[in-house]
Image 1: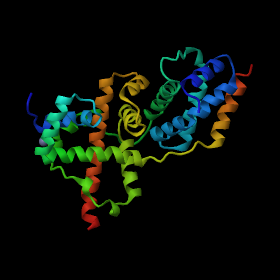
Image 2: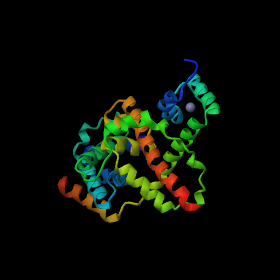
Image 3: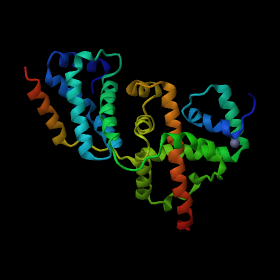
Image 4: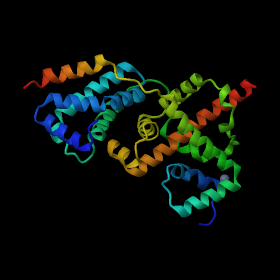
Length: 80
Length: 198
Ligand SMILES: [Zn+2]
């Protein structure tokens, strides 16, 4: 395969983002991105989606009460 | 913080009934497990319940832990299984697996606008966060679990495949479809708000 059409690109986008495709494939993709605004937009918006999904969830600290309850449960169940 | 060796030592002690060693293992992993629960189930009570179920089950099943994976991978697996059981009972509208599969076949039917160039200063972060959370919640449980582990937690493909006992290619496919779906949801949002911010 020496050229891709846009539908082929779509299936390879995640592999490209995750760096899971070989270097030949990668070059062909990058060539396509230079020539096809549509696929480039798709790539950008997909990368942005991943970035935004990480921001959507704020990390929280575990409430002390919750941890203490677990310690307690394990101690009473498995007391030697 | 203890490394992999320290971890192995603590696991060994805990296997011999040293609950203090197990408490140290909890200290090392609690943030990960609690936040995973929060992400999968989206409420604090459920996350706390899952966490308790996970550690009690882990303690009980310690003899079965052979150290083939890291202790935290093993915990992730237990926690995800408990969470999946709850997720399957959830109410609320979900996109079907069929719809997810079909997504990619008509993506090019509509013009693809590059909303990544949108003026982000205008965007309401809180609103965006809610859209995203809702979209993630509407994924079928087995897709949501993959997406959260892979893209939000940033866990490598091989490890996600181990945690969920599915093939690496299933991890890739589900990640890809979830991303396309979430992208679609965000596109709807940006296309509408583009008009509003002006
Ligand atoms: Zn293209």
